[in-house]
Length: 66
Image 1 (cartoon, rainbow, N blue to C red):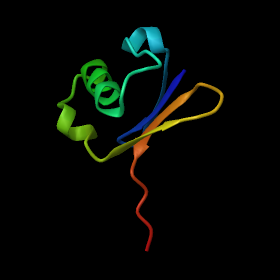
Image 2 (tube, rainbow, N blue to C red; image 1 turned 135 degrees about the horizontal axis):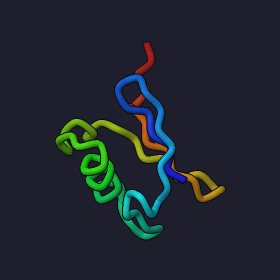
Image 3 (cartoon, rainbow, N blue to C red; image 1 turned 90 degrees about the horizontal axis):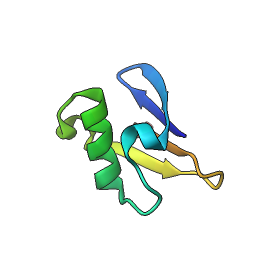
């Protein structure tokens, strides 16, 4: 499952829906997500792709503290 936080909304999308495979790098995953959301890939440039031990992927804005 791919969990996405984009512009204040949360989405749960299957890997098949995005066309994401285990060996894809972060850039490729963000490109597929941008296509799915119908936005320019530059909108996801600063986003973080976090791969969890469970196999889930979390794509979220970079956290800024301070």
